[in-house]
Amino acid sequence: MTIRRMKTYTGGQGYVYQYYFVGKRPAPSALSSSSTTEYIFDVTSDRKTTFAVSVLLPEQVLGAWAASHGRRLTEAEQYGAIKMRLFQAFDEIEDMMAHGRRLEVTAETLDQVLTTLGVQ
Image (cartoon, rainbow, N blue to C red; front, side, top):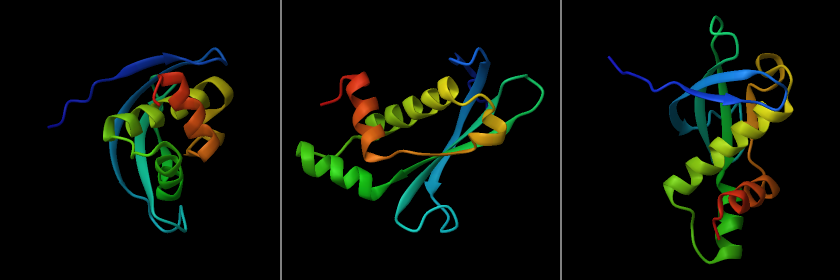
């Protein structure tokens, strides 16, 4: 039996989210046409209904960042960027279950969240 560490985040919309990381995998072709990694989180805002949120990180975005910075992101840096994208959604999307189940990390988003984290 796997014990998950439930974490809490208070979003900008006033909701208190609880979430935990489920895992990552290559994204199914139905979600992305290019090589993409899907990070999956289970999320609840009411402690009754839990739903999956996928955060997609395309290899093309990682490659562009690596080309402009002269190095690839580490696994920890990638995970940090993914969590920051999830937090952005918690802050910006009022109804995560209806409108925030599939999030994508764009080149602009990646630069923004990595700057916030202090990653050069």
